[in-house]
Image 1: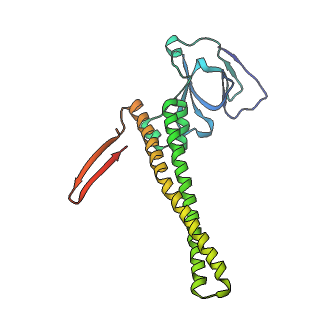
Image 2: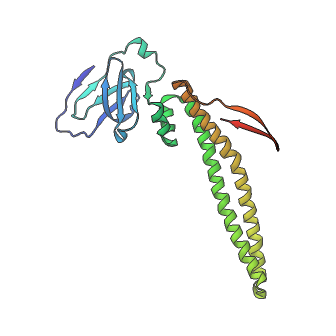
Image 3: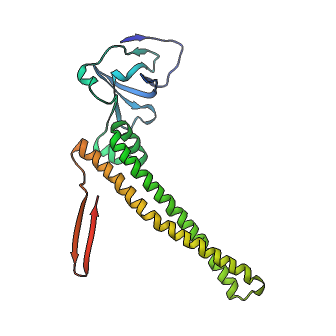
Length: 229
């Protein structure tokens, strides 16, 4: 490890340069024998990140001092399969938005991240279909109402146009309803997969989480099947 200082250059943040040439704008909190702890410079109230020194080429500090990492970290630390580890409390994790959780999991646990990402994409696809379906359905319903209004008012000169509007409206309304129906399983499966990934993370790192279960409930008026994720 070596140090160098550069004068006349202004830095607003610490810059961590990894051995694969990635640049991280950071606020370095601690440098110990095997790790460097830091906050993202653009989100200093967010989670604390930990990166192994074995994955760092150099750090350019705010005052211009450059710390170069050339030595080996202890074997116990080097045995870690991931160069970057993130620490966050359960409360911090729960407070993150879906996008923040996805970025967090990408750095923390690739396997859980892939599951979360898959569920998130399915849910977004379902939301997109739902929005499109509602839009087409609303537009189709409007055309149907206009067409029927013209027919009922007995505007003979516009009967053909009114019929065309009604037919187009029915087609658009039908397509819209089909998209709404198609969005339901995508949203349900996507949401369940994403929630399952969140629970996997909580169970793995904090020992808490919900276990998916299927319950058969008997009521006075019938039988209900409930799936809990």
